[in-house]
Image 1 (cartoon, rainbow, N blue to C red):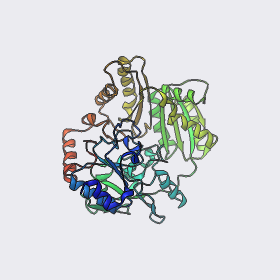
Image 2: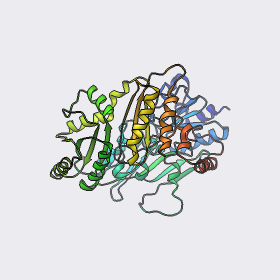
Image 3: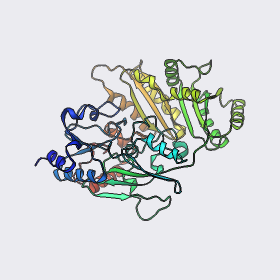
Image 4: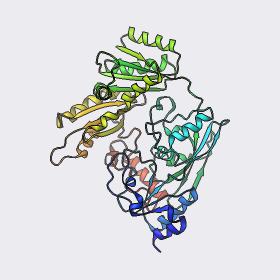
Amino acid sequence: MSLIAELRAALGDTAVLEGEAMGARPASDMSLTGTSLPRAVIRPRSTEELATALRLCNAAGVPVIAQGGMTGLAGGANPSGNEIAISLELIRGIEEVDAASATLVAKAGTPLEECQRAAEEAGLFLALDLGSRGSCTIGGNLSTNAGGIRVIRYGMAREQVLGLEAVLADGTVISSMNRMLKNNAGYDLKHLFIGSEGTLGLVTRVVLRLHPPPGEITTLLCAVESYEQVVALLRRAQSGLGGIVAFEAMWRDYFHFNAEALKLRFFDAEHPFWVIVESTMDREAIETFLSACLEDALISDALIAQSQAQSRQIWSVRHGHPIEVLPNLLNFDVSLPIGMIGDYAVACTAALKQRWPAAHVSFYGHVGDSNVHICVSVLYGPGEDMHDVDGIVYGVLGQYHGSISAEHGIGTLKRPYLHLSRTPAELALMRSLKQALDPKGILNPGKVI
């Protein structure tokens, strides 16, 4: 009996899709770099069905690739054409919200926004938040250790997880559904799977840590004249505004492009940097803080959002959807020590402009958690492609000892450059872990390492 026939017999005909029934969606994540459909798509409905599917695929030596909301940007969910894709979209739902322990138990295919709403309905707050909240899944968020706009206060996805359940390559179920904040009983196995992009096991359920609601959040937009002042504003905000919720910087070219396209103008003058700060402090304290920053020439101008609508306008510039119309647009996600980001931006821009003088190069990012994003649009010459841009961006980054991935993962697109951010000993240990947990190499082959 063929593997597909075995899978149909074990899971049912409706759980196995082939040919036109798969549609185009399994071919690529949001990087749009995928070009091949998988051999088939499996849609298990439970941890047990996923374990059965993996056991059969492992026995046959057939590679598998996990797919969730397909919102990744590193090619981590892209098939090469010979794998069987395992969609986790039917392993979905909120199992429990425990107000006493401030935890939420969800299945891997549950959209992040659904988890957020469940926490809110219980009077609690799920700190993880991404622009793709409506379509990304909590399993995918864990798989890539997603970041988002609230990392500066609450940490990455990893910090929101108390326990999880995962299935290994051979179908073994590892159920480590810890619900306690403190639990030092041996190795903390959840960290094997968070951020490993489905190469060590597939997450099926998760225990998320919840928080008290942050209260009313006020959005500020500040005009700043230098990167050094951006950093100084960050430190002043952290001490003078208590626990800030977000701190987002935009370089002039990025802000100007998106604001012009959206027909939004917040101040009369242009400035080199624009910073969004979100705080839970009361308005009087915020006004006092801004007055002191203006008096000390730390900022040149500032705006306090007067409504949710105005706050959304400010954030619409930061989300940057208009910039997506640029030709051959590449989005990079890197991290460096905060003090080096400004120098890196200058050096990276200069190197790209030297190769392509008409290139669009702009920067924006969380900054307060050391993360900056880069938008690069170039018109390739004969024999040139995206890898030429990658080589420059990551080559300059290597000089500053930064990370090639702050929050988007490695996937396939960044794998050739992983050695710039990890030592040979670290890479060897990663390979040892892969060999121990997936000796046949069937889980997401060719990704990460």
